[in-house]
Image 1: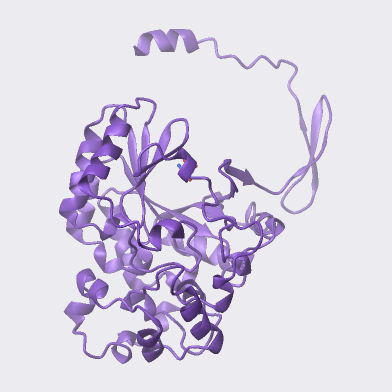
Image 2: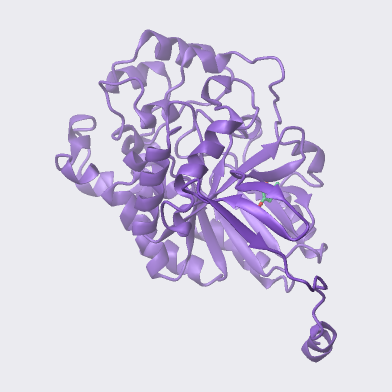
Length: 391
Ligand SMILES: *Cc1c(COP(=O)(O)O)cnc(C)c1O
């Protein structure tokens, strides 16, 4: 339990930092731990990790905020925080079938900042930097560096794309991590998007509450609230990440009227158990964060060691549905390799479909029948009237 941890455990790792510096996100970013030498001064690396750092150096960035590093269990190589932040040798090995662009995003990129794959919503890639480079990143072709930050012209082109596509009613800002932008830069992005009449809602995908919670300041929360409806979609993968600092960040957002959702990624030996996912989702709900997706790992280069068999996720959902609050049961999403988009999987409760009834097994395995109604016409007679009155 984070609550049982000694006060300021980071003092041992960063004794030179004052409490004010530690709580300052810019200090945290200036002191991000990069490279195997710096890292091994803070964590006794295993041989596998040392090789991982060296072998992935030319493939993907290594960077860990001091805060997130302070959550690493220095005594256990399978610490879930450690596995998400420190590479192992397996990450440098691309297996047959693994893809650079597993979600087929680049072929759906009309301008550099936009991925437009679904009819009514777009992904807006605002920058290529993160507070921690997740070892399970599937957008590493972008976050590995070298793409450079999008310049103002590219951002303008992204905004212009949304403006000229009236079918886009939902814009999902991601990257990289949009909350690494200053409040001013963020406003420069959000304000013109919010002015577009057909943009009904904005989402921001971010790991800031998990990896750099001190970035969530009151002024950030107030700024975001001005652009409501704006949802923050964050990425907790393990209850160990839900610290008092993370809780403060999420609660500050929600208190200011910014709803927060969580997307977890299922990772072998990191969080691949129903008990852990249940505890994670309960801990999220306790800080008013709604579990949204549980993602099957994408087929990205170097991630096979973290992939679970599809049935593992389905089995986890089976152990949640019915057994705990429905709000604690996320959608299990598989983003199909090659660009097919997300589909969802769930346990199959249907035993048999008959014309007049469907036979089920409930969450306890008990048999039940649901009878079909005699009338099957499902058109809504008021629809035409409603459409007329509304316009
Ligand atoms: C996941 C994703 C979205 C958002 O999907 P939702 O199911 O609406 O959350 C939008 N665009 C892209 C390219 C995505 O990968």
